[in-house]
Image 1 (cartoon, rainbow, N blue to C red):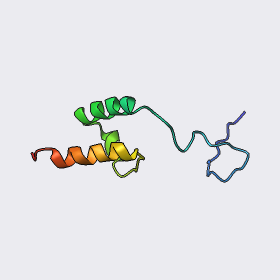
Image 2: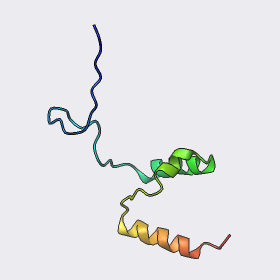
Image 3: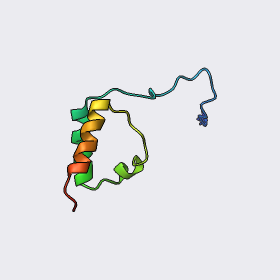
Image 4: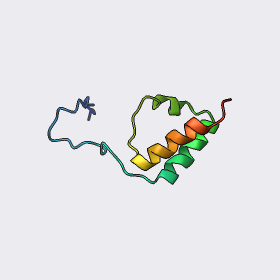
Length: 73
């Protein structure tokens, strides 16, 4: 019996999406993974450089203040 491969284009209404479009994760889990990836200079991190993420307004304020207060290198 020959196996036949199909190209998934997303147009087939009978096929459910493989994964959800958005996920909810804890910030601590994300920061640990991103910190490790940045320290080890993982190339996959660069693949997502232009992706947008949502953060709460208070976290955004903290990040903005931190970036402005950091001494220059």
